Image 1 (cartoon, one colour):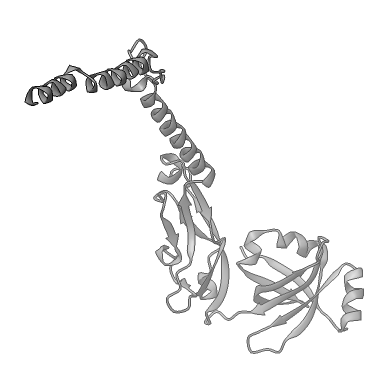
Image 2 (image 1 turned 45 degrees about the vertical axis):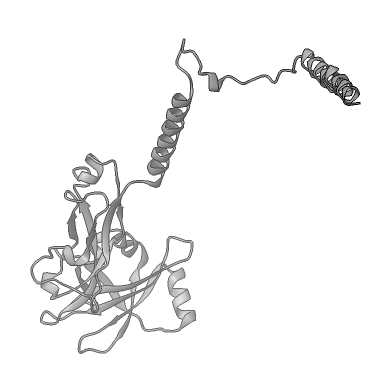
Length: 265
């Protein structure tokens, strides 16, 4: 069932007129496209604001009732107040049944809990895109495109060109573009915890290898040596040896030599 938007032709234009229009609870807008000239319009703010909260409103062919006449249109631009929940301006584009339109449609992700990444690997799935550019005839425009994540594993991604699109819908890409739609990876916090646990286990293993077993006798090389003083008797022995050497020089052999000399005489 088509969503209907009620509007009226706006006669006054300009910044001051638009400001007064907003103060009166109206929203200024523009209707353009097709073979007709652009028309400035105004809409009641509150009904329009509630319609904008419906996702379907942003990716559907709408019926615009303008001064009693109805046209098929597509929502193109919505300007919101910087900090108030207030619609400042809105644009609609006329569509023709036989002309393709270029529009962004929302993506709906399903079966994430059944994926290998989450169910078996403790991974995290990131939605890189939440909407996608497509081209199609107005009658083929889908409300959304569904993305099945059940086959996604850690370290892998789903790209736009991997998707199976509804009949009559084609991607609006340039050249070799192939943006990532969703990816799965292990959270950085979990990786850091695993690295810390591995480091702690390695440190504990090294300490266990170095520590002696209970009741084991340490090797001699592992026992620190104590440098001992040399015995005091050794120097005394050396001194005696030195004196003995001198007494041998003055032995009886020398006296015998003198006796020999006396015999020759």
